Length: 280
Image (cartoon, rainbow, N blue to C red; front, side, top):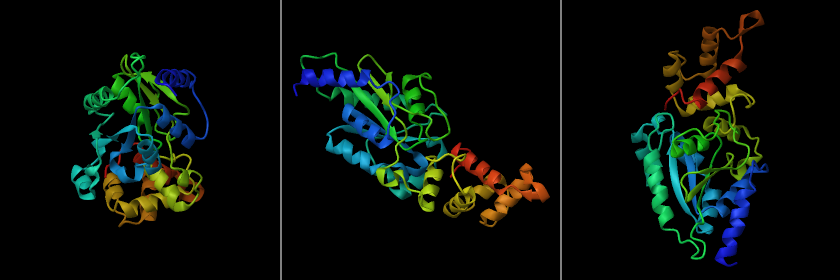
């Protein structure tokens, strides 16, 4: 296909993507095909866990450029990242949408890559398309708002807040495409407890939607010993049942018979975790 017609076809695709709905992994594939540059938004606390290697392979196979965006960097200990070797991932930018840090550096990296992309000689006005992908609740819409410098997209703590593809102008020459959170195909329909716990930990499955939240809290406490006790100032000796019992009584989450509402208490713990209140 000639460059002129390829550009026209892509322009039509972008024009017609008003709040598309569909199976999200397929939307991610479409984003990759339409984009010149792809931002993969990662949770700085869980860089390896939130990397989507399926999407990264598609980006590489399509010959597109990628920037790894480490969001929620205000919630991490950089020494921990060094130990895990995650700083080897590049090109990368650390950002915090909460403290509004890293936006300028990310804009500059996008512009540098954009200037290296050859545009059709007969269509110099063709925009550079920057797709934004990542797991649910890693903060894709928040990163776009940070880049633009104002709130142009709605954001929400619940996974699945973004339902379709949205286009946002960064500059006259650069267009951003926001997409719903993408879970890898191999995990997309999984109901295994281990995968559910992982998704809940990452925020890919909302605290209000997860089944058996007590199991998730138990898994979190095993992975991050002492963190939850320190946050709530409760001595639980690493036992999630003790933590839930004491916290439930402290918060007044009680049922008939003066029994602690374990479900409500566990969901509160997961909500505090997903909201970023509990640091690791």
